Amino acid sequence: MMNHEHNPVAVRISKLQNIWSEATEKVPAYNLARWVIHNEDVDFLNGFFKLESSPHGSLEDIFVVLFTPFGSKETFARMLISDWIDMYKQGIEEQPQAKAWDFAIYRDRLNDLPQGDTGAGLLKEMLHDFSKYASGETRPLVVTLIPRSISENDAYAKWISAFVGRNDFAYAIKFAIVDYAGHNYFDSVQNVENRKVITVAPPNLDMRGAVNELAAMGNPNDPQVQFRTCMMKMGEAAGNNKRQDLDHWGSRLIDAGQRSGDQSMFASAHLIYAGFLMHFPAKEETQLMLEKAEAIAKRAVQQDANHVVILIQIYGYMGALASMHSDHRTALDYFIKQANLSKEHNQLANAISAYKTIIYLCHTHGFAPEYLEHLQHGYLIGLELTDDDLSVTDYSFIAYHYIDANHYKLPNETEALRQRMEQLFGVNWQTDLQQKFDEVEQQK
Image 1 (cartoon, one colour):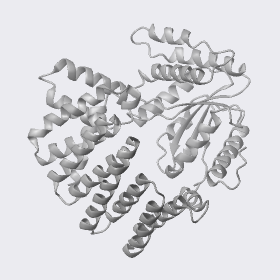
Image 2 (cartoon, helix red, strand yellow):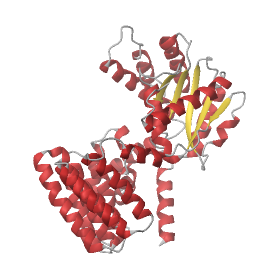
Image 3 (cartoon, helix red, strand yellow):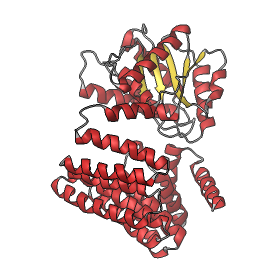
Image 4 (cartoon, one colour):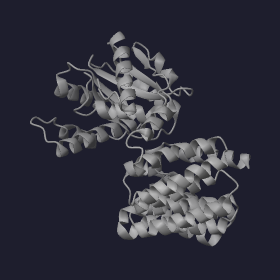
């Protein structure tokens, strides 16, 4: 187990190690483990997985964690095989092994699967083979699935139940999924026929307490420590609607940022303060704070282009502030600045986020001349990203509008885009988005 008794994060990850050990030791023949975690504690669980899937893990289990998006039951197994192979290949490139697992066999067989074959049989075979390679099937191989996106929770739960329930796996091969306390999206997997399913449900790990402890660690005169403390206090002030307290800690935050000597940190201080001010009726003060942040961030970017991320964020906040006060034309200009700067510095995920907002503003507030122009720009950015990178962005929003605007004029292009979105987000991706649009309209 971890032995960092003064580190609040390490203490909580150690608690997860103990909870996991106790749950699996009670039912060593389990087939599927369902973590039920509080939303705010997800980062602790991710830390647990990261530690235990590394050479520094202390548990007997061999954890392999896959973030493969769930699009549909027909494609998921194939995508898991592909991601498993890519992850293993990257691992041996970074850390060569004396005796490597022969992944090429499964890569070739995956490529040769006939149309209509979901790949479930090949996935099962690959897992058995890897378990034999990793430990001779003497240690539990815990295949942990945490999809970056799930097209439909019920379909995902049914796939888990079917794959685990209908296949006979060696004793050493286990599966784990993550569910969320208070939501219990995947309760149904508890009833997989002829399989032993356990629930691993840690108590609330007190993320806020850990953050507060971390913020207070170190030399209290260190600007970094003061910066973290001020942020924490400002969050409390905003949550309690105490403007005077916010201004007190905001002033101290800016002072800590200036004394750090880091222009990016100084700009961040102004941006953070402005972000909290947006919770209060303080439009002019917020705008002034953001303009100061912009000026400082521009100087920071001149010193080091890596600081451009903070400037990208600032334009997003400026656009949000203008939109909050119904100045949609000004908001649009700021988001266009954000998109252009993101493209200029190859921050493509940020560019997609900006174009989503641009397209929404144009579509909602009647900026027709710009709508098609920016829709085309947003569409083209998606073509530059891999499926993995695209799956964690809001690109489906852009794709929805692009297909709607161009399906008659560009049938081949829009059909290819539709198929790619189905692979990433499931066959119901358009229906799901339309349902969300309808809900927003009803709330207006």
